Length: 260
Image (tube, rainbow, N blue to C red; front, side, top):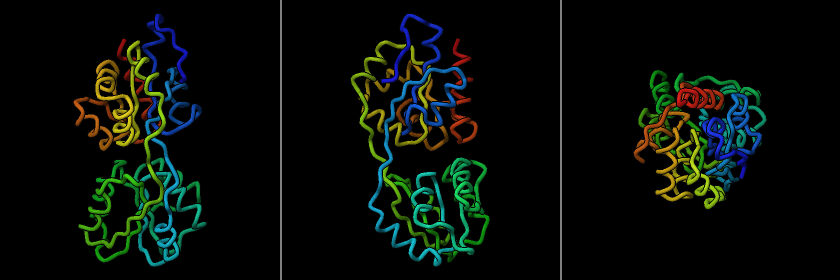
């Protein structure tokens, strides 16, 4: 466990932040937090695994039959871009969030629709202002994708094909070590970049220690969907101003600074 803090050093303990997303010790969120002088405890509650891609492969063989393709995460972008070097000229691309759009552009894909707010409901609202009824939409998604996008676009009259592009699974976490660290105290904030991270951290820690952690530390959510999972558990999270990992880190930094 990445824990080098001295429990007697109050000033240092006040700057300890838990990262629950699936990333390595030098991952983007951890790196941003360290840039702000914060100490990171890496507790990845979820992991991203390869899915059975037979349905995705079949859909992509007929990609020219779709009018739109919708991406809600960089993992979906990676799964598709590994199989399709460049999209058909007539295919329009929608992205949820700046990070997803950035990865698409890095891969050479243009982005035709990106809502200002980085969440699924905002994407559906953005589509509501466009003629989408009767159009074919491909939605490569996580195994845990919420129904918001597919159901919302279907309600607008689109023909949506949702296929699994990757799996979101519980990570192997040192739960005993995490619980012992919670008992010691001194964690200033916990960052959550997905609803799955909230769900799986609670499962890994158990409800008692999960509640104890979030009563003592600030919960910081990357967006409203993630925040709702925390609210349902009796927590009052702070929501990042924009749904990017850098802004999540900056929001956490500001929050930690105001605690003391």
